[in-house]
Length: 358
Image (cartoon, rainbow, N blue to C red):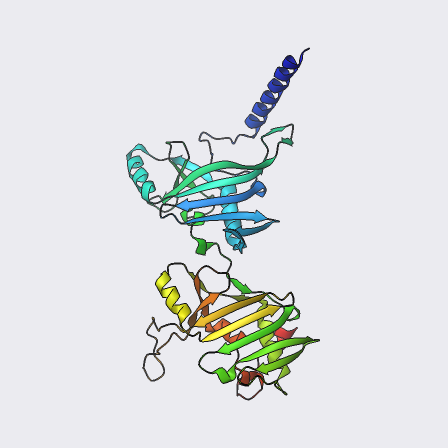
């Protein structure tokens, strides 16, 4: 038997095996479901772009998901997307009478989705052959149906439109395939236990005499420097210092403002921050957060009925390595930007629960 004959025979066996395996695993039903991903553990990358040219790339690295490169993604949102891909069903083809309307809608309001899997070129008797990162699916997610209980979708290179749904979910799926960066970026700013903090610097633009720097000298002991005069503080409230540092275990921003104009951002950067917070970990990596007062857009009055000049609930903030301005809540950031007098025990604030220190 010559080499050519052997090659033809081997190729035929592989082709038959692939055909048998495909038929065996083909989903039953009268409507073929090309949108479903049977094994989401193989999905390594998801690219989405909408008609406004907003686009995101979700990438799995060492079982951690990132958005657009190195930014951590919201794990829960990615899990919801993967679950949708695994359990999505086709309800019915779009009716002829509604077809033209949905084609028009998808031309202006749809999201292209590309799925990349660590998938084999083919499988023989359960054995993956030539496994690598491959683009396995491309489809378009359109608008919801009139009753908002289905979502119109189509595969690339196909003229067929289908109404899809998720069993047990009474709604539409379009928002799960968002191409907006803000919907995927993890909101965490700091996630540091006390033992990982080397230095914290808090600078107040309007009250510089309250600015200070805390440096860890080991065993929950610290040096505190007043930035107003550069002198070391001789006495401070240890519990209050530990309390402030304990809050760095989980600090999140509120909202990503990806619609703020470059002119507005430049104006913000040119102004003096209300508070500047710099945190350095034991690996000597520093993250700086610059916070700015925000106008009282909600027209919230004080106790005398007069409008506060500034928002009393939130501030603008610029965080190192973030591409956009964010909002942060006083409720969260007040805990990690106490004035110096508080740490010295000179005010009347009550201390928080010592459970934070456990």
